Length: 212
Image (tube, rainbow, N blue to C red; front, side, top):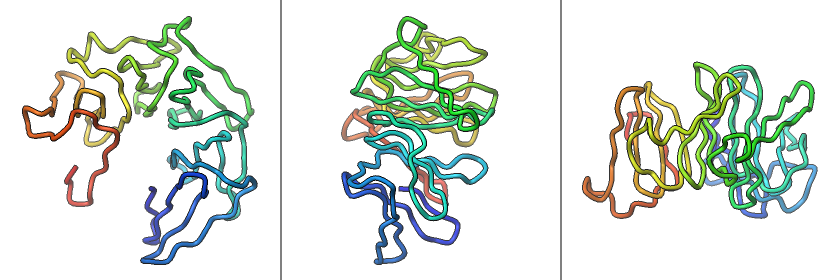
């Protein structure tokens, strides 16, 4: 789900493609491919909408979803501050990939390059450069061309990291072992001890009044 400035909401579905919702009205967004599973909607700082799907990366252009990169199961999608898109395909074990929309070039990083695990579930751009990466084995970071295992520095057990977001100077981490926050100095964790009914936190969203 992705809100738009005009009050409409974009809704990605399983095998039904993309819809634009306004109130109780749903309108399908045309696509160049039928039966799309829209797993991820990502808006880059310039306002461009990108979509991670079962058939690769799509871009909204002229009101139509058009394929820009053929790839199997793009489940994680984000961007760095240089305009590159970073993506992963979760259970398909394809590692972490970088796509340059300007040149069309793609490079993939795997465990042989220092990636914790080839199952990448979440990608979040770092304003200081590079990207945060959530894998089945925990949190990593790509910066200055190097892949860093961030688990020891984080100082807490997360298990698999399913979703990531940066807000109010904190990295928010949805994981197999609860919801965690990292402000660059120390972690804060929310688990069953704090009242979570389950440790599996798949995703999160913040309301306009700041409620997570």
